[in-house]
Length: 242
Figure 1 (tube, rainbow, N blue to C red):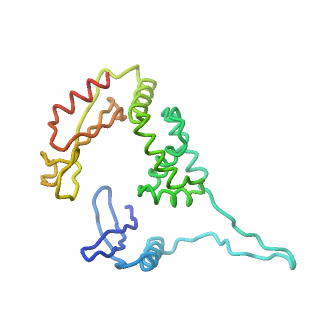
Figure 2: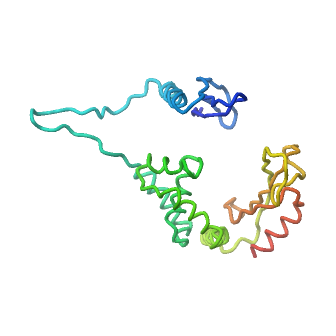
Figure 3: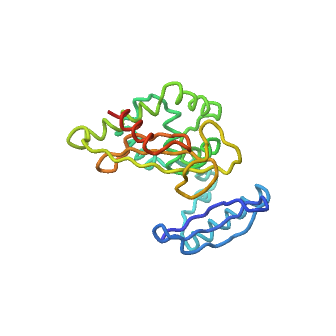
């Protein structure tokens, strides 16, 4: 069984802190810690939830200890999750993504694997990992490069190359499926449109298509208008991947 702390918005505009218990994909229980109306209350509730989640777990004592008179005690100046970062960086490199040559983009990707959060909050995640974090302005410039240099196409080519290297050459069979993601907005735009929803909703949505090899390794991901027919997305993705 897995347990984790989560923050969810409430109808009154507050932020509720909960401990969620799951068995596989099924939620078996939810403990409500409290609702916060400002950042200070949220910090207190999050700390209470963490302590309750790890109740009884022993921790290393890093409190200063002076061994001899006149000798300054040891002090922890910082921490770094070196092993975790090395493992993630190694996987990123083996997939061929280093070909992008963009360290800021790499930091954003790996930090999101550790903790999915906003772009601005990614700076905190990197700091907690002990990894030098780029500024928010640098992050936004990296996102602009993603579009200008078509990172999605470059990453798709790297994925196809990796798939071919781990199998017997290019896949003769590919698998494709789409899903819909809805947005709680009232008006449509060029991308978010009302269409056939797999969740039976009437909100504007987008369609996300994923192409994988026979082993389930992702080759390409695409985004389409919410009212686009599935057959049209399939022909676009499969023909473009040849």
